[in-house]
Image (cartoon, rainbow, N blue to C red; front, side):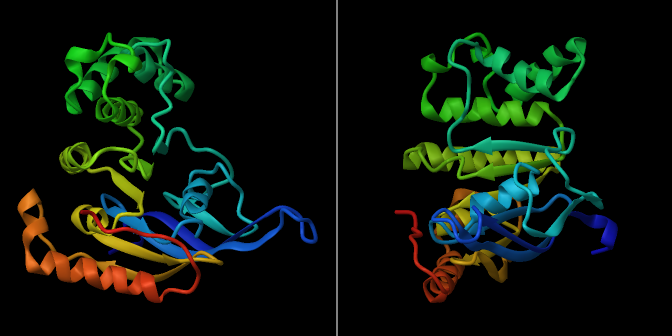
Length: 268
């Protein structure tokens, strides 16, 4: 791809926590480089504590790297980029005292979207995730999967073009998780967003991704960029194919041989 097709560049980035010599000091929690092209859906997988969330926070400007730099659309990241990047976390971070549509509107308010533009964008994003009929419900009235749909709608309403997702489906049951995976692929196909998706689940990574970044622990380093060869659009039948299981087993094998300790999982 051409250089201007690159949405995110992580250039020799390292990050450490605490001051050297202190009990909180962690040397080289993260040491890595990677490129993400526009419109790609990338999955990042690695053992617990390897620095996946740290990497997302560095890319999003929530953490400053100890060394190296991150470029988003060829501009160095020096702080949060609300016009460029949206987040979806495992915890949906919805305000329980606000309705679903109010929660979506709040995201745009913090981004600085003019008030007149918020309502139509909120309703469009809720329709995209199938929550139009629940706009005036409160989070406590929704299932876990519906709350994650609302969180995704809030991210979509920001129209950033880049979405960072930190284990957004990790707390969901197997059926709901599968439904959310299919919804994400549908929304991604419709919006052409660039998505970096953190997961502990090997099957989830293989099902969703164009490429899988396999990460080792301590320090967190990308040890392999695995190309996922399956055509799109994808349906659940893919998960039954031998090629799918062969690739999942390959990724799992790379994780098991990676330096460091931690846990990953395969869907059941």
